[in-house]
Amino acid sequence: MNAMNENEKRQMVRERYGKIAGGSCGCQPAATMSCCCSSGTILDSVNQVMGYTKEQLKAVVEGANLGLGCGNPTAIGRLKPGEVVLDLGSGAGFDCFLAAKQVGESGRVIGVDMTPEMLARARENAGKMGSTNVEFRLGEIEHLPVADNSVDVIISNCVINLAPDKRKVFAEAMRVLKPGGRIAVSDVVAIAEMPEPMRQQAALLTGCVAGAEHIDRLREILYEVGFLEVRIETKSYSKELVSGWFPGSGAENVVASADIEAVKPIVSFDRA
Image: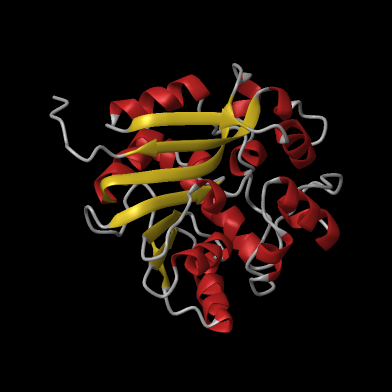
């Protein structure tokens, strides 16, 4: 994939999520479980299947939860009071606000998103929530606007699959994490060889399907950039969730929602 293709894909993603932030996205009418075409009842049901409690869903302002996730990274992250949390692709701020409650006033949450419209919406939601320990920064997850060795936990929800260079994303995660820091990511991974026509469909790319990395290659990437204790676990609700995004496409047979966890070593080793 050349640089121009990477930039074109980023721009397609930026445009789609900018439209979602503005309240429209052009989903398939039949996609009853798709993020922006779901009724409130369906959205709440899907979020509870992914591991969010009713209390969590009620704890954020309306408009923070856009239903764009595929899991609950704040649950697998086991966040502790006082920790610094970084959310890759923070959207309207839903997971950031949940994380902020868990780390408390002594902790801090940073959300990074490359879509200005999402950033504006997240900051507006933070004002409505009165969240003083959350901030949102504009940036690409391959080039994080975050200092070295400054973050305890990195979370992300169905975003890394959208990045053209996933190795760079995880290398950046390694850079900004403190020694002993960890990643707790919910994302879509490929579980079978993806047909080329499926990979080339723009809707499937921006809809978290076509850009999914194969689970075995993803594990290799994490080890290559230096992570330890890598664990990738596909979720039982995957087929139900993914089939609702693009009904009739067969996407649920080639990709799955997964929890991805790994730890940065406390002592660095020369991997040259």
